[in-house]
Amino acid sequence: MLTEPFAEAIAEAEKIIESAPHVRTEQDLVEGYDYLAGSIRASLQMAWAYERDFPFFVSSTGPYTKLGLDNPDTLYYHAYLRDDAEYVVTGFRGTTADLSFQVLNGDYSPASSPDSLTAFDDREFDIDDDGRFEIRFGPGSGRNYVTLGAGSAMLVVREVYSDWSTERSGTIRIHRADRLGTAPRPHDKDTLVKRYGVAGKMLLSRLRTFLAFPEWHYLKLPVNTLTEPRGTPGGLATQFSSVGHYELTDDEVMVITVPAASADVAPYQGFQLGSMWYISLDYINHQTSLTRDQARVDPDGMIRYIVSERDPGLANWVERTGHDRGYLQLRWQRLTRDLTPADGPTCEVVRFDDLPEKLPYYADQRVTPREWSDRIAARQTAVADRMLG
Image (cartoon, rainbow, N blue to C red; front, top):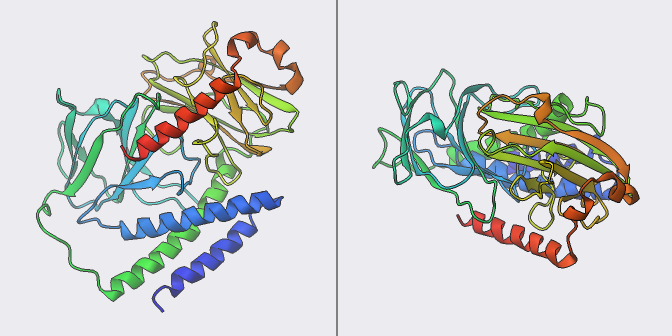
């Protein structure tokens, strides 16, 4: 049966979800099944997008195909490569805060991450006055040319928003230099059998990997703390992160205080929450993340995030949406210098009722129910526009 290997993988994947060590409640399990649905969809898409001679960019993750604590502010794309060919990437640079590229030598596995062979942002190549660019990847060298190292397998592109309402994504496409104007052979049944098998393997690897990943980087840290800023694991260029995990009752609030980075140091600065499935929370209909542009900066130059289940009536409320445990992540991108501990966050867990006394600019942070509704409406509209961008 053509789809039998994939069907067997789905059955095994369901068992992985049900036996995940963090599952405590029915809601945990329901979210796991929802995560499974997105992973099934993504695995099929990745298997069918495996075209190294006739590559094209596909969305790596999105609102319904989440993985790897996906950043709500980022559009992720990838295309497959072979290390003995030349590829041409052309595009139009939009107005987003960051556009970066990374070449990987494989995929994530439960035991390790792929090696980053090359990582850079758009400051490393020429863009003309109209915003258009061309980059070549292959055996050559020179300006606007990226030499593909042995084992190069995937090109990943990240386009990052800071202001969801005003910034616009650009365009990007890829082709193999010697194949433009030709066509691949039609698929036969053997190809489809192989792809269903590959999709099943991808599905199981995906789930196992990103259940193990937080153990490497998050869960060994003390709960309700954040690390100093550090280079993001995985070889990403000019990106630093601060990470942690939380566990709070509904009467507890985590106040995270961090300097608002200046645009000349970090054009992008963002904070988000993630579930124990290591994916973003609902960032469309709830304020579960904030960029520097979206946050309200206090007069002392600090951003104070209020991680809480209950509504405090404050602009920088980051909603837990029923998640009493989860992950914390701060990111700075397109940096012009390394960050120091002084650039990073401090955090404190306080009682919900003590917020007025604990926040030095409490009155400046107050929002009305109508203002809050407007903030959510702006998120919903911006994501809808982005998906069509």
